[in-house]
Length: 328
Ligand SMILES: Cc1cc2nc3c(=O)[nH]c(=O)nc-3n(C[C@H](O)[C@H](O)[C@H](O)COP(=O)(O)O)c2cc1C
Image 1 (spheres, rainbow, N blue to C red):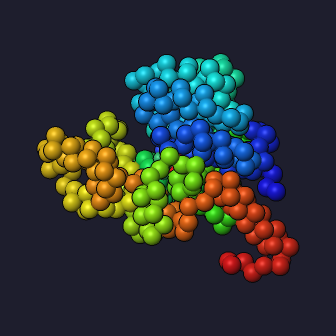
Image 2 (image 1 turned 90 degrees about the horizontal axis):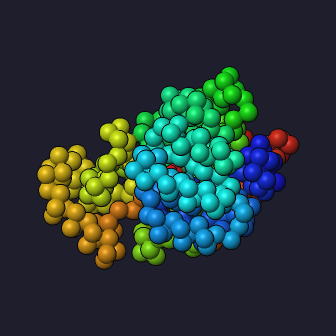
């Protein structure tokens, strides 16, 4: 229905890519998105080796790639070989300079996707030879620099690509959850979208039903960018990064008091792990973006793909035919 450079390059039906969400985008979700005609991605994230091996082995579609958190991959670089052995459709690198890994990905003849949050990072990704730039705005769930919005970042990168490397593809990420978002992203110059939060809220996502129930009642206003959970998860994120999550009691207590939290690390870490074990989401983190407000029910991932594409194609064709009022 929506034929773009992305659908042609990856031989997929729809220009929709699953975000490689750490531990959430397992084989079940990635395979479901691929089966529906999108591009599935395994969330290699911080690099849980056994999880990664298991999920890559369980993938039942050829249209599935694998994503890594670049600064974390640098601590355990042979995880990339594990992914490449499975002949992924693509490798995606986020959060760090992709250059040290780009050559190995290219040598394996696997397309390289690089997620960026600024124009400078987009230039760095082009220098590294990215085949696809994923431009992520600060609306997005999860980590990023957070200072740019999807609505301005995507056309800025589209212009950069047009001037410097027209064969490179562009995918928009951050805030896309329905057909309106997909249609808007294509209008901004993207060849497709990468979707996290809306796929987090699907039956195939590795997410607690209690977290899903909480998300259904939330709006984008309930999310916040913070480093609070990086402190208690003890992940060494570069200083300019933070993450968008659902606000809860733990964030309300510590956001703005990060130095106090860091000074109380042993107790706070114990409290956090207890919250996670008990699925107490007043303490445990729920990583979702502003698009959580577009989540009204938990659905199969395939339904999300098909609905998003149908709505976007319908809007774009009705506007083009002059049979719909712009702005509806
Ligand atoms: C639960 C969750 C986990 C995420 N984990 C990762 C990750 O491990 N690696 C990564 O590159 N991006 C990760 N992201 C960010 C996504 O790649 C993507 O940029 C974002 O979800 C897009 O915005 P959206 O949530 O509004 O769809 C995560 C996002 C969410 C919601």
